[in-house]
Length: 115
Length: 115
Image (cartoon, rainbow over all chains, first blue to last red; front, side, top):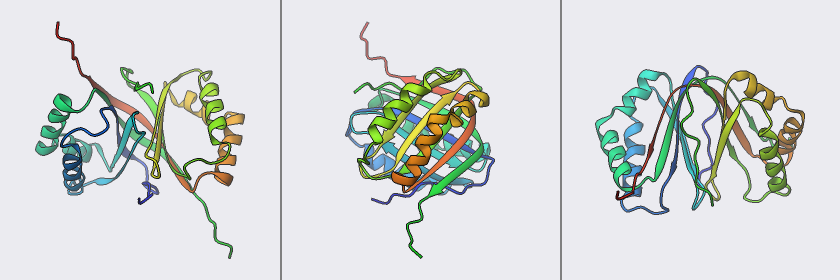
């Protein structure tokens, strides 16, 4: 598994934090997710995303956008809207979306080189 | 496992999104995490948090605060600072923190009642 995280972005930028509770393997979920991952790449101003889910627990996805215009373009994308509607009807028990403007960010990377 | 997510907060509020890559079961990690979960509850303006981690993959924790003052109080907490230093030295391969001001949020909860 690739263990990359989004880092090094220059503030300000926007995050959509999506937290959810759903069954472990809902029917059709994986295919829809793959399609959304593909579509979002084409949104101008999309900067990246990460996703994590504790088995049997909560899922968190964070998507990064240059500005609100980019974030809203993805929110309103017709195929994305249809997927969200299907998710509410069939997959999610509950979810919450938090739209935030990132004002500061910083990171850490271990340097294990001996030179 | 409790499957609760933070929801229903009134914007504006602040999020600290912490994304990380680390080994699955680092020594001492669980005890430190439990202590941090306990300590953060006492920070005035702390509103809640969620955490998710895909086994072998990326971890994401989101902590919610009423304002930057509350968020910074937690960032600067002496025992929290010591834990972060230990984490950089012993646990994390990399991490990133994104501090954002939440301007909009909305949620969904399935209503499966038949009445």
